[in-house]
Length: 153
Image (cartoon, rainbow, N blue to C red; front, side, top):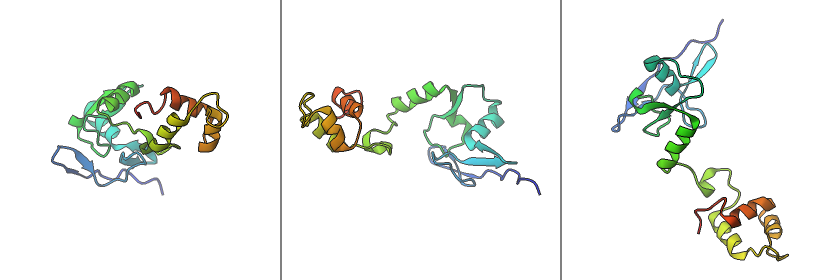
């Protein structure tokens, strides 16, 4: 008994023209996943190749609509990972602060750290604050200089 063959794609069309996949479960980033004889493929990449041919090495299939469940070929475009990140930033889709999921500090704590930090003070220096907040010294330093959390005033 071999591996199962590809399950047919089914989707619904939204008011915005997105073709939202309903037949396949998404990965943890929301992209529907196809399985064909043990090979895992993201649905939007499969659709691109079906409609336009092979994806050149180093390129991503990106979404104009920003909807990972969409497989409308008109909503897809090729770009580098850098292009995809620029597109994300231009549409203000990147997670900031606590929304990132891996953030240890909160916006409130960032404001407290900036207010309290006195670099050469034993009680309120970077090392003391790092210990208090459960992070490393460079994390506090990056918060103070605005290298990270720069949008928090």
